[in-house]
Amino acid sequence: MQDKDLDLPRASTRPKDPPKKPNYVSVDSKGNLFLNMKPMTLASLQAELISLRTKDPDLSIIVRGDGSIVYAHIANVIEVLQNANVVKVSLATEPVAPAQAAN
Figure 1 (spheres, rainbow, N blue to C red):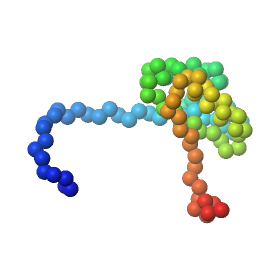
Figure 2 (cartoon, rainbow, N blue to C red):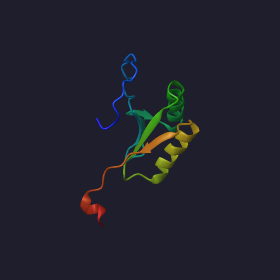
Figure 3 (cartoon, rainbow, N blue to C red):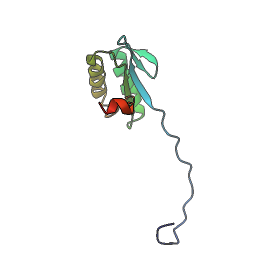
Figure 4 (cartoon, one colour):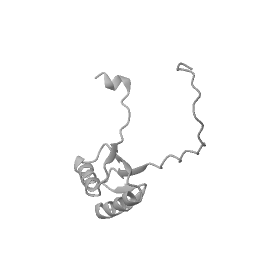
């Protein structure tokens, strides 16, 4: 150990809560929406996100969009997330191969 040797107080051990299952909003190459693989419309997505956020105020969403889709589809999803008051949002990407990154 690289810290001072101390006689720390004792505490009961409590198992950690399991990590929360990630939630994914996906947009396929045809512009179809999915929440955790369940087909959605923009309206049903917003209603479901509000329900999820009510159950989990710390809800986080990972947005996945096919690289060939029109950006407007992702913009629509972001707008629905904002309207549902979901603030923890990440955009999924694939890592660039080293040769491509150099270009």
